[in-house]
Image (cartoon, rainbow, N blue to C red; front, side, top):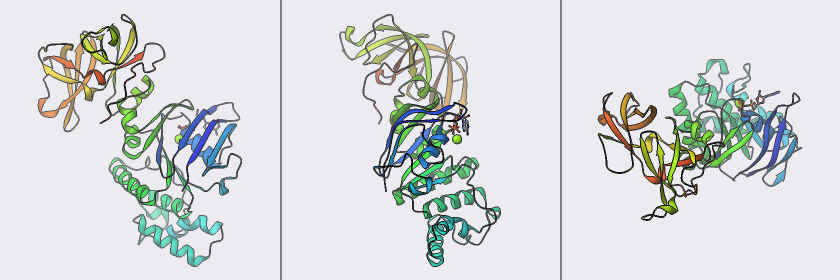
Length: 373
Ligand code: ADP
Ligand code: MG
């Protein structure tokens, strides 16, 4: 078991692309750590640089406190699972699983024992003699994982290992992977472009954009309190509402509660907590559809007033789009309370859920600690 320490890391390709651009990260011993970001943001490059398959142009990588920045891949103590699994088609499952051991000249009897034990852990018992071509996608994915685990690295690096599976199998494999990682307690870096997968699996998530780190936090933190509008847009299965707003009163100027201010948004106003921007400042107001409450008709106090445009079924919830003075705002409601289009409604939110971002840079202004429960 081992932690990973990355300092000032940059990976520049010969064509000049800075795929990883000045990154600092610490992955704790035994942690399930997700690298999340859109396609092309540098996730695979970062993983390959940790593995030693790409060389670092700047900075250092330490695994288990040892500087491995210039160490050859085979000696870093890492095992990697590639996106396409990269199984050897002519070898049996058993041979695939134990290939890294064969390379290290481990005795055949020990290899057979490892293959049997690892196959049992990954629900592959009975398939050891098959060739990869005779397996389902989910089984092939588990063989690739089994091979990585059998190599007994200190660190497991997984590059979008579930992306080749269909939706249902993906969910099963996700649960399986989480349980396996808990049982083994092996430090794991998991790359995905799927925010739901990262939220479901990881202890902590690093959100990347253009080779840079945009936010590092627990799934609850990045969901409830995105550090910038990029993360706000990227995280959540229903996108966060990001609306132009104007500060009406700063927290300090409000007599009754010194921590609550208010902000004008399309169709009305919302309370907002703990920020220090003067009145009249233009801001971007971020509010998740899940944190808005929809009431039919009017309500007393700060609210956004508008008319229901459309409702989409999300299962037990519905996503309702409300037209507030020409701006479309999403709100989720329990399916049984789904209003019909044309209904006049009011939207309210607790001050602690209304986030303010700067207009120009999109960085979070709200300073309150996250209510993450
Ligand atoms: P991700 O895995 O997040 O989709 P990658 O790490 O594959 O991103 O790519 C990051 C950036 O580096 C992209 O702009 C990509 O085009 C570029 N890139 C990836 N591999 C190479 C390469 N071998 N040579 C040059 N540029 C590359
Ligand atoms: Mg990739």
